[in-house]
Image 1 (cartoon, helix red, strand yellow):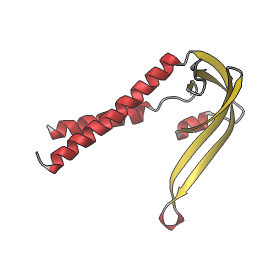
Image 2 (cartoon, rainbow, N blue to C red):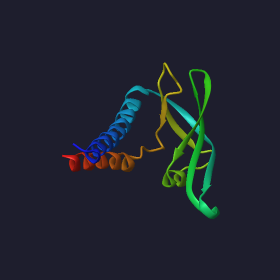
Image 3 (cartoon, rainbow, N blue to C red):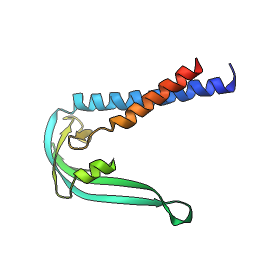
Image 4 (cartoon, helix red, strand yellow):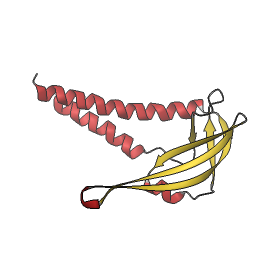
Length: 133
């Protein structure tokens, strides 16, 4: 087994691990976050990162929201895709599910999981592992 084979195995298991982690984290969030609360989008922001020659190389979109849980107010910021960003508005009411014993652990029903990216990690890992065999 040479260095290329080892690299293929490491890349394959690494990508596959990230994909499986993403699936499991979403599963456990939906399983453990059982208390529903009403939240509100408080602000939306787009960051443009400049590349060489001041050309925009990447754009990152953030949504900031707040909700009340167990008597306290929780503020969070989440990175979202451009499509999700377009579907949300400042001041919009959102549905938040959180864990009763840890209200900061939550998910927002209107912010969908990025299954396409998860599928890319799993497929990429599988391809690397298949190529290493």
